[in-house]
Image (cartoon, rainbow, N blue to C red):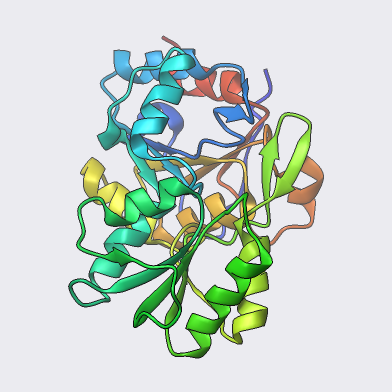
Length: 282
């Protein structure tokens, strides 16, 4: 094992110990799996939380799958969850836009089909592909079928006055053998062509964290955010006052920590080493 270490976080508040946590919020890519590869300790850590009746939430910046898709994905890992346990950057974006736009607002969406589904489920937004169709907002996430035509239509709508909203701005996405471009690469192209910076909803902004602890019914400091990225997971949780735990199974390396101004409360090699801290002397 390596516990790794308790670090002096930027919050300058003594972090809650893992064995005393009120709840956990998990990132998924790079924490529970990497591409199609299941990472070690996933079943065991959720079994431990269930045995102790500790609530949890899965919070991902990925907008390419719906909560229902994640329920199915977790089942293949051997973990049973409900859709209510899942928060995506797309569902967070929908809730954000419901408070910002009028009823029946038209959205031009850059993303995979799951993003469109999540934006319209539980809302009365109208999806359009026409930049001349009174577009209230261009909503962009990771789009694996992104084309020059898509870029042209999105940037045109923005130049005509549509708001520009990004589900997240992750530069890369971890997969089995390295990294692939993330939503941030597409967001950058649209921002350049449209001449406007986006409002970013996902991590490192705090909306997913604050709504998460409201849903869990727990305090910020008593809730531990487990993530693999300093610049999104850990930063978002710090900004929202949560305790933070970094696992080194995704994007961030130990070498990255040495040069970072973003400092997690805890650092672990992987979930099994974290699990030993959760169960304590049990």
